[in-house]
Length: 234
Image (cartoon, rainbow, N blue to C red; front, side, top):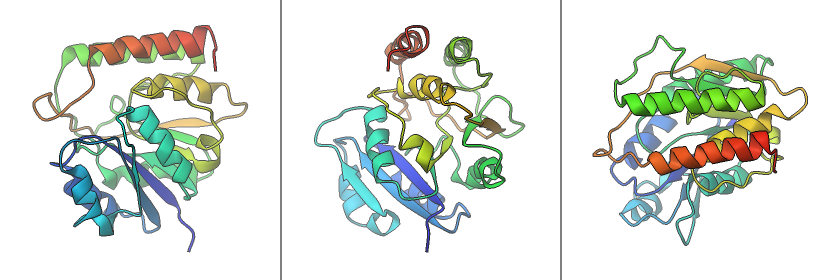
C-alpha cells in the first residue's frame, strides 16, 4: 500500500506532549500516513517514551547524537520520507493534525505543489498571546514577500505541506528556525511552483509551557531573508 502523507515531527524535550500529539496524528483522518520523529538530542524522557510505550505510534525514529536545531531535524526527517506528500508537525500541541485534510485539499485537487497553513487568514480558533511575536512575524513575512515576490500571510507557520519530490530535491542548510524563510525564498525560485495557503487554527503555548523560539531566532530569520533573498546565496 502506498503512503500518501509523511508526517515529520522534530522533537526536543517534548516528553509532556509526545503522547497526545502522536495520538492526534494517528487520529487525523488520513488513512495512509507514516510518522517520522526526529529527536534532536532531548535531555528529558522523550527518547525513552519513543523507544518504549509510544513506539507503536512511530514508523521511523531518527536520533541526533547532538542538538542541531529544528531545521537540521527537518532535513533528517525529509530524507527518510516515503509518502507522496510531506508535512511538518511540531511535537507540541500548537497545531491540530485534524486539519491535515484541509491542508492536503489543494494538493489532492492538483492545484498546488506546496501548501502553507496560515494562522492569520483563518476563521478558526486562535489563542491570543504575545503582541511582539505577532508583530515580528508580520515583519518577517513582509520582508520575505519583498524578496520572494510571493504574498504569503504567515511565512513562520509550522504547517507546510510539500510534494515529496519538491522538498527532497531542495538544498537546505539552516539548522534552526531559519528554515522557514530559507525554504520559502528557495521555493519561490523554483520555476512553475504553485504555492497555496489555507486557514488553520492555532493554540499557541507560553514560555512557561515550553515555547522555545526567542528574539535571537528572529534576528537569525532576518539574516536568512537577506542571505537567501537579497544576496541569493544557496
